[in-house]
Image (cartoon, rainbow, N blue to C red; front, side):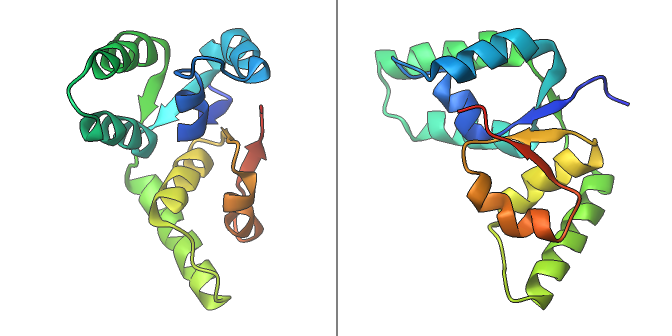
Length: 142
């Protein structure tokens, strides 16, 4: 048992960087931060987003936020061998019913399932098909 209850999707983390973030998301993240973790695929998406930005003050501020706030607040959970088996199961089940899902969504879902965590995302519709063929639990804090 990891001691966590929630796994945060990329859109939750990116919401924290907005000039006027969703108050409900901010409140829940502050209240439940010790119960939250990040899957390594989400961390990869965050870093990818940073690397795409041109050199600027905005990039410096966001880099500082991700390194000094996000990494200090949330532990990263790996896409490990257990998650890989769950991912393969999800992918094969979705292919059998003709509903393939984006690779990253399946990996994020697999990390959540492997660690028995609730995936927090704004995009619950993106995970609907995955949820139908797996034990994925979802919450929307937006």
